[in-house]
Length: 411
Image (cartoon, rainbow, N blue to C red; front, top):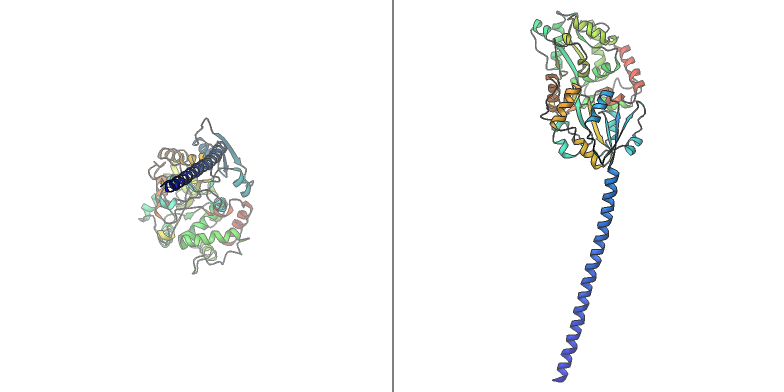
């Protein structure tokens, strides 16, 4: 009995030692885990604190915008006590993509060649911001704030006289101009002496005849073209649409009485003179230029998109957009982007710029601006940059050369 009892005591002692060892192991493991978690927490806390301090300074760049537009956009960013806002207006021609990406958190500019080049390194626009605008306008790398528009303005008096409505297809546009030549001296006109108007008009014709796929192809080709000759015969639609065919058609318009013989040398004053004298049935311009025409003249014209032979699936409204990009993960920048896309902010921006808002419910400046928003929302391509910004945003000399060669061709 005594031996058995001694053995039990020995086993009990071993069990107690083992139990104590397990308890120490558990305590040690828990302590180690707590220490690791504490270290991780401290590291995360330090990182968060450092980021919070870094995010206190928000570096904002503006490029290619008017002073009035720049000041208006600045005013929409709230001045907060703990935030340092560093605004910088980048001079024309002084835009280095690498420096811009490294130096700034936010960039405001016109959507075009620059935003396309930066899209690969830009941060995503917050999803909650994108949800405030139509799906066709949503771009998670570059979001439009307000829209301009490449428009045709039709004389309401001429429409009444010839008993026709605004044409809804490109073919019906040429039929319309042929009918209107019996009522006015120059059925169509644009101030083609101005490089932006000329190149945008060519782009609008390509969009009308070939759709978005042809327009994208034209942008791609023009970005690498050295002159008109190097791009004029490139097929844009997989069939027979080329710049050659577009320009050849334009050379016939004066001969057929569809436009002024020297429309390509026309200036803004010429357009105003003919419009005021009621000798135009329609003219091509930008909504922002439309706003500068005296009310007693422009009240007699109805704005429209360029009529197209393509459906909404292969169409994009040529509507240059003042846009914003996020170039860093600065948390305050992401908050500030949202400040531009409330209903009240969009209403104010449209009212101050006379351009189209992009927010679903924001009140537009007038019916023309409201129409632009509707048209952009109604086509798959949404708002597309004009050729001026899509190709020549940083290439003014190339634009001068290309437009000079276009004028020489169609004269």
